[in-house]
Structures are given as C-alpha cells and as structure tokens.
Image (cartoon, rainbow, N blue to C red; front, side, top):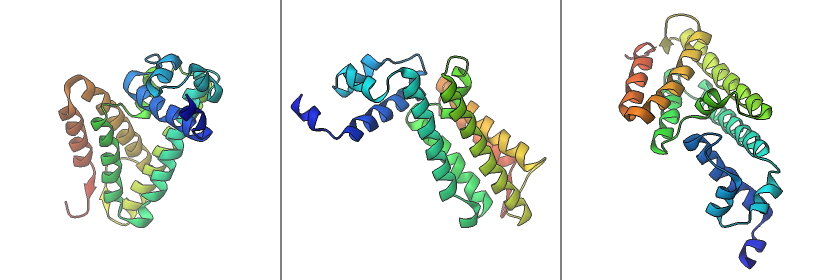
Length: 197
C-alpha cells in the first residue's frame, strides 16, 4: 500500500488507460469493469474512479488516445517521406499488428459497440475514422499523381475500402484465424497497383 501511495499520479492513470484500452479491443465495452481493472493493477477501485469518475469517461479517454496515436502515426508516415505504395503497405502492417494481440482495431470496436458507447467516445471514434481516411485519401491521390500507385475509382473511395477491409478482416480473423486477414490484405494489394508490380 505504501508503494502504491508513492506511485506518481500520472503513472497510475496511464496504467489504467493502457489496460482498459487492451481490454476494450479484446473484450468490448461491456467486457470489463472498474473492479476488474483495479484487481488486475493491484490498486483500490477508488483510484480508478479518481482518474475516471465513470466508465464513459474512461472509454472516451481511450478513444481520444487512439485518435492521437493514429494522427501521430499518419504524420510520421506521410507520403512526403516515402512513396505512396510503401505508406499504404506500412498502414496494412500497422493494422496487422492487432492480430498478435488478438484484438480488433479501434474502429472495429466503435462500429460494433456504437449504439452503447458514450457520445464522447463516439465523437472521438468518428474523428479517428475521418483522420485515417483523410490520410489514406491524400496518400493515394499523391501516389496516383506521381505514378507510384494506381487504382480504380476515386482516392476517397479507395481509402474507405482499405479502412473497411482491414477493420472487417480483423474481426473475421477472430473467427477463423489470421489467414482470413491475410487474404483480405492480398486482395487489397492486388487492387492497388504499385510501381514495379
């Protein structure tokens, strides 16, 4: 107990956020409680409520973190720093990283749980979707202009297709393993002609 009281305040909040985010992607919104978080982290339930008065506050903070992480990732992988084909492949690899943790992507959680998620979490999820599609649209458009990639339809439609395909494929993978996800990724890449292919 003494050791816990000496833990920096921000560290406890961060531990709660990280664990709850993992569980949200593994178990869904209704798949965990504050008591379970407190037990897993060996802290008092009151400590969870201190940082997040209600579950809706915690989940809104998680989706805000998801969005901020995605924005930072997109900035780091801007097509200004590499060709569009490489950027899209990096995006697909990023989504594939959820397979190892047996998680669906944040947008997959939001899509399935949308009706029961608190409004602030829904707003963050909508912004996350918009940011990801905007990044892919810009990346694909620039890639088509410089000949790095080619695809049917508009860049915005292709971006929506990629986001929807990866999100859905992660959910399918929970039913039948990673082969379903890999099949969808191969189909996405087959429809996206990159320089040298």
